[in-house]
Figure (cartoon, rainbow, N blue to C red):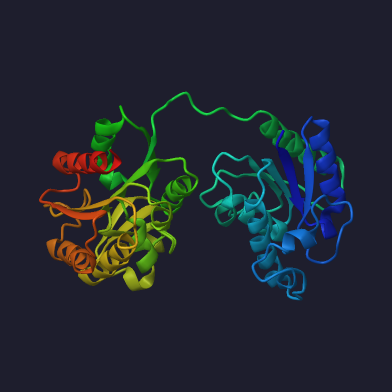
Length: 398
């Protein structure tokens, strides 16, 4: 049986961690207590903090010899992530602690493949949890009381979490019966018509996973790619790039497209919805952008049209990463418009801005046997463009 890794800072939470370990064992699973404390050693840990710290690229002293707490925590998170990558017997990971330990343990959890059970009991689980969860399938459980000694409430919460982790470790979810390979796609409201047509064309052959391109959506799709859970990607909607470069609320990370570069998976991409930057409600738009062309999508989302100069930067960012892809790549440019709002008579129709985007991609493109740049004289949401996307994927996935 794979083990439940009970992870925490034994220098401050030893009593609670030992209780969790005992509860895991009582539930029938095999626990392993991993110490990630940075202040002192704990002899009862199965894996000592020294052993974990030894996995840091700069050695133990980079973690345990650091006097600044924030620096030590960051270093321990890096060391724990590297340590977890060496383990082949992880049935589940159970963490518990405050903000510091949550930062350490969830960093390592996010590095684990989708499907590995991850449960974090945390004092910060009812606040802004996006930095802790990211694109991973980890679960946060609010501790209610601080994890500072055992009492009637903390025993119940920690005990429930331990039983949950044990149950997940002992009852592995079997692989789905479907023998169709997985295919990831990105979608936004203004690219829905395109993605719907592509799905219909390919769903008999592939299990389709659609990701909402809200920053975390793109990260989640690439997490699946890194985890080996998809066989290819049709990245229609790259709107997270404008938000990254210009300052919107749905930004990609600087690692956007990184999973495709690393895995060399078959990749078909386009420039869906890069005509816009996303903000919240109208009154939250930053002052410097309030005189720009804005479109209120709904009460909570305001869109800003990108300019030719911005589109040039967006095109340069995308094409630089396309040129680094060594797997089979087809990148399609919809010359008739890139979103539902970028069409004749619509709010963001701007052929000059689109032309700057297309020109930047063309100028930066480096021809290679594995890559093709394809221009389609149609709007992104036109069925002919959707068919071209589907045909391109069939071509490189064959």
